[in-house]
Image 1 (cartoon, rainbow, N blue to C red):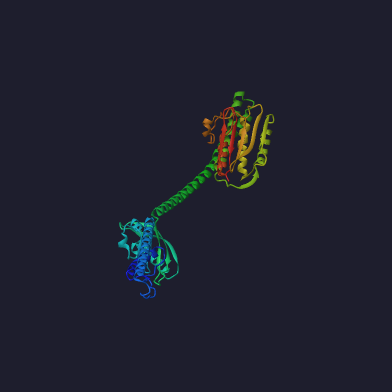
Image 2: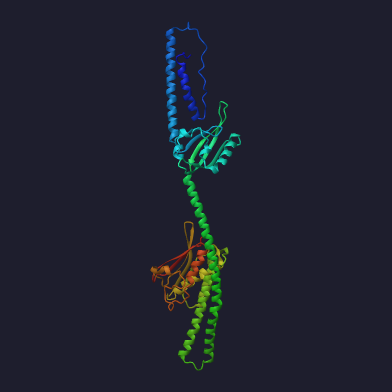
Length: 437
């Protein structure tokens, strides 16, 4: 039984319980402590009544201190949170805010309590917020998450993400909305920047695509011009040289006859160069038709053709079987023909030429190689190797168009692959390439 002197202390502790009930999502009942049935004062002596009252007073003080300590710990925790913690009553007015509100909005907490939250929103967002809140109060939803713009005390606009849920009141009062508000302005700026970058990138891609289409049209016109405008005079030169060679055969001395031979050979080289140039120019427009096939089976006829051209050559050719790839078969024939012909050409001075086609695995990549024991090359000039018309050896020593390796690189890049070389003068060369995925 609480004595009449202790009852006011118990009533004074009830607001503390009520406040703690709000923080924890429970509401303490604001009821006066129930009194036990009256007992006859005659049963207990006065000294016993005084002792009981003292014990009750001590217990109540202990309880009050514990409640105050708990309230302070929870208050410190709430105030240390970087997010705004809020509570709205049934009419949308702010009834609780932690100190993070002032850091976000610039408004004092005390002056903000009692005001509708929508007063602090961007005018364009108020109708949306009002509709969402009304739907929650009607019971259409128990929780909500939305992004809104807050207007700060300085007039700035900050993007905020609000996440809240309905808290029912155990006393039967109208429900409230409790939740957090986070400042997402930096994230919004990053998203806007990324969106602008994507739009700029798309614009650049469209512009680049238009440039490529225009370039392809120019290449088509160039190919037509090369095929017709350049070939016609070349055929005329070769034809008239052939007529002179036949008609004046009995009157030409050795020097004149040699000059005509040189003219006709030059015409042939020029025709081959034009053909190679056209093939290089049209690679970008040629469709890529991937199929699965054995690269080694594609290489064997090329080697047979090379042996037939120079049957006296001694050459040891090693081709690894089972080099299955998924690529354009026609274009890969061009790659192998150029690489194997290069190896055949640059081993011409060797007593026994050694040429190999194989592959190695490095991680998830398959790296193919064509290697030889020929004259090799100086790696200091390797940057020129895959450029059109760039040669690292004299054409008198090793004839060619100077476009073969540029064509190889173009084909491999179209497959998503690449090519590189390891070599040294007099130590042969090892061309390595990949085909992408």
